[in-house]
Each structure stands twice: as structure tokens, then as C-alpha cells.
Length: 147
Image (cartoon, rainbow, N blue to C red; front, side, top):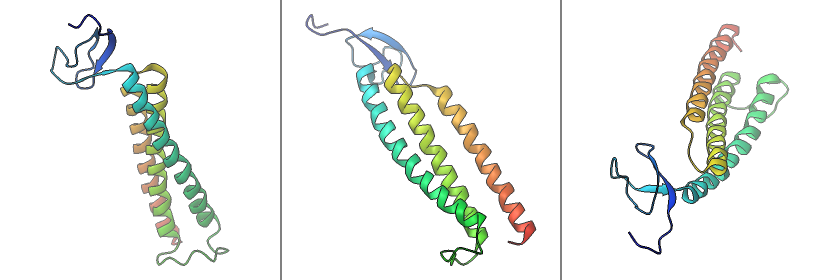
């Protein structure tokens, strides 16, 4: 080991091993170790990407919700398929919105703690699944009402 090298807490992305060392590779699995500073930079990138996705898709959700709630008054509803197409778009926008929220939450966690949290990703994956099921239910309701 180099006497001038500083010992930093490093985490392995593959096996989640944490160690204070100057080594660059994990002793367990041999993968590259990542410092808390590197993890926080990655978190900053995730916050930026997740924030952009969440803001943009949130605006698109409001647009699609407006078309769904008032389809007869909207002149912009010229899509072939009408309300059913807007319902599908609403589901897709919701999925991407929740994906952006997951990225944002994971990034905030990484910024604060300097490591990733698999529980946040799992919880948001469940929420995304619920949203997909909700989209299917919405499609069934729209088909039943012949809108």
C-alpha cells in the first residue's frame, strides 16, 4: 500500500461489500470499488435525470388527464382512437413519471448517504406494477363504457 494514499470507505456494486481501504478492487468478488464521493456524483446525475423525467412527464400527465376528463370540449383530441388512445398515453406517461420518481428518490438517497438503497427501488417497482395494473383496469373501464 502507498503511504500517501488516503483510506476511504469504498463499496462494491456487485456484492455490496463495504470496506475502508486504498484498494481499487473488491476482496470478495474482484469488481471495482466505488467511493462515497463517486456514489454521490452518481446520485447527482440520478437526481438531475429523475427530476427532468418527473417534471416533463408530470406536465404530460396533466395534458392527458385534461383530454380524458373533457374529450368533447377539446379540439386537440384529433387522434385516431380518441379517448382510448389518450388513456393509453396516460398510462405510458404515468409509467415514465414513476420511473423518473424512482430515479429521483434513488439519487437523493445516494446524495445523502453516499450509497445506494435497494429498498427504494423495490418499493417503487411495486408502485410501477400497481400503476400498470391500474392502466389495464382503466382500459377495461373505457372499453366497457365505449368512450
